[in-house]
Amino acid sequence: MINLILGIVFFNVILIIFKLFERFKVDNLQAIIVNYVVASSLGIFTSNISNPFNYIVNSDWIFYALIIGTLFIIVFNLLATGAQKVGMAISTVANKMSVVIPVIFAFIVFRDTVSTLKVTGILLAIIGVVLTSTSGQKLSFDKKYLWLIIIIFIGQGIADCIFNYAQHFVVEAGDAKIFIASMFMAACVTGLVMLVPKLINGTSKFQIKNIIWGIALGVPNFLTVYFFFQALESNFLEASQVYPILNMGVIVLSALSGFILFKEKLSMSNWLGIAVSILAIAAITFG
Image (cartoon, rainbow, N blue to C red; front, side, top):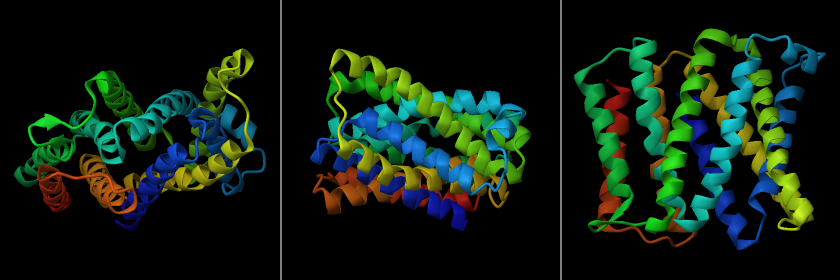
């Protein structure tokens, strides 16, 4: 359980840093690419593998790492934009609503147990997401960013399913760090493909502050994914429990962080959503 709690905390740190990107005019893509260099380096150096690149190329899971890493950079970049455009709490909700995809996947593929309490908790989680993302009777984000919400939802859901499948069937527990490092390397390469044209045409300019903030982001990013992998690996909870608890925990903590640190306004329905999300976590945990 401690791994899951740490995953929630470090994911919230990531979102706080994203919000600071806006304040300090950080280039999202540049900082995110640097973040992946840092995160992959942490995975490699802490894996204690003498020839990591040869090990990765000859692994059974390299294909999964490439796909997940590519999805990571796309969703991560959109999540950073969302935190700035629609607010910290709402962008998190957009990301975490995708929980329904890996949960259904776990029920079908892993044959996770289905109990009344667990299903009730998942339904409460969905209600909590909706309440946290609404203000009064209206959605609290600008409709012109609806496309952003949809892409984050689908992309994150698919990435979670592939990650869970790889962890369950392909990646050995001892390969967790090097597997995660491979994902980050793939994300870095994809990010560079996206960045280079912008540097060439002048729409993006290199700045040292982007490197500094990327380094700050890389450490909690690696720790978030690592602790999440360990939470799935521990078998303390089933995947259909881990994903909703992680998502609801992040929603509650990020909403409170946005309120306390950035003075983001939360309506009565938002507060009710936070309360429902906490109930959802309890129901799913004991389901």
